[in-house]
Length: 199
Image 1 (cartoon, helix red, strand yellow):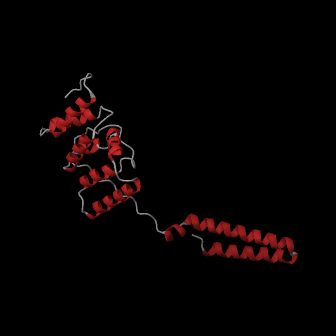
Image 2 (image 1 turned 90 degrees about the vertical axis):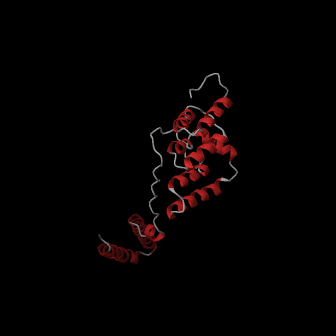
Image 3 (image 1 turned 45 degrees about the vertical axis):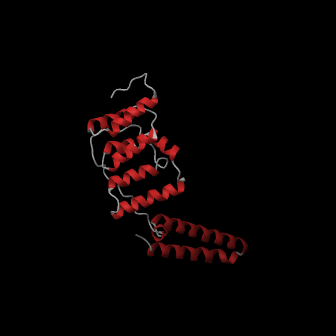
């Protein structure tokens, strides 16, 4: 299915669509490869790629991530970005719960995340039928873990030391009799605290 330079874009797209709808695996694969050489596409081709990807065709799934397919989805999309972001999160949750098979979740994800993720530069031509599932993101730390992290505790201690010394300096500047006792108390307090919380 070689592309003729004199063909109109509509004819090229019609030829590719026929190849994608073919019952022959080789014709479908050639059509997907030819799509990788073009910088334009159509809604009918995008729909056909989604149908093929939904039955486990890895090449069709990879083709959905090409820039021309993103452009087609951007043009035909009727769902706002915030709603699509929520849909993508829900799809990931359904996949995790086993309500959606991995490759079907990938097809739906690509339908809604066309401008949330960068487009792939070209189709991966490696033969595969079912794509590998995406790695699960690492769990986010809780508020308690964040507040009690080593870095935050160090920052709090340094700030505390600074404020105590600053307060002692300010108070000592006004009342001479408090200078020595404040410095001694500050030294004992920080010395004791450092011994208690040392690693």
